[in-house]
Image (cartoon, rainbow, N blue to C red):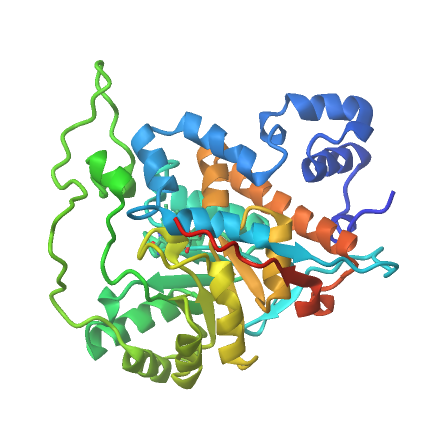
Length: 406
Ligand SMILES: Cc1cc2nc3c(=O)[nH]c(=O)nc-3n(C[C@H](O)[C@H](O)[C@H](O)COP(=O)(O)O)c2cc1C
């Protein structure tokens, strides 16, 4: 039996090779006795990314689970992000030699082994102790590009040996030229090889589960406090609130901010949070190295639709001048394949690896990445597109939307 190329490059003895294959294919029945061992390993029980979600939920305090899982207001975009993939149909090709699958991709001067990146996610200590560093180590072990949210970045940088590291900012660092220069200096001196600039969180949205739960957001920086014998949490000093009129003490970033940032660093600057073509064109005009089509995992402005719906117009407007990435609701290799067909150079995921983190720590994150990578490789083989360059717009068709309005 022939396996995707990336598995064969690693020299292993027979036993560990079988274990690795079991890990790749999820307790595959053809492994006989070895499969029996695999079935005992709880890490190998989930056979898909979504099967990590209930395991994560079981491990987490209900407030932490809601913080991980929730979207804003009606959670309409949250549902859209997941369901919109169902309207995209793959058109597989026949009789193509697919005995070698190559997932590698060139991105910002780096060769990545596969087009799956780990998104920034704040508050990981709510999901696992020292979560930012644990996830970073997992990404490094899997040689995945990891975008840190910047929490305790120095420790994160020291903790892993991944291909690249990205600092993300949500605006505060850019309130004036001086603070921007200090930020750039810090990021460069800490060995980050790129900046991911999140544009969609100039205000924090109403996430109603967190508001009802009276979540103290700071808990997720330090770890959820223990509940008392009656199961009560300490009273939140600064719970997530509703009904506070939005204002910021200093101007929020604009396209001019991007130009200024561009003039201060040679690092790639990727703009995260675009949902329309015009903004893709502006990103190119102001010197962005790449964009991530994103609705922040449906946690910011609601009713913006699914990111996979917005992807084609951004791809069209950017016209191949810089790479377009996308995130939001990717749970399957086929989801990733569809995005690549619609013009994405790579995809990013957050909740999938957070499920793995919450359920099993570092091995969970690694396993989730492996499952997504394996599914993508397998589906590329099945669809007759053995390398990323073979994937184009003809690989998918989009079913007509139903006229139904909620
Ligand atoms: C718990 C959590 C925390 C997040 N924190 C950040 C953040 O600090 N900065 C950021 O740019 N995006 C953040 N995001 C959004 C993700 O980077 C990403 O855009 C989105 O979650 C992708 O969708 P997915 O979770 O369905 O994969 C967060 C998402 C989650 C679930």
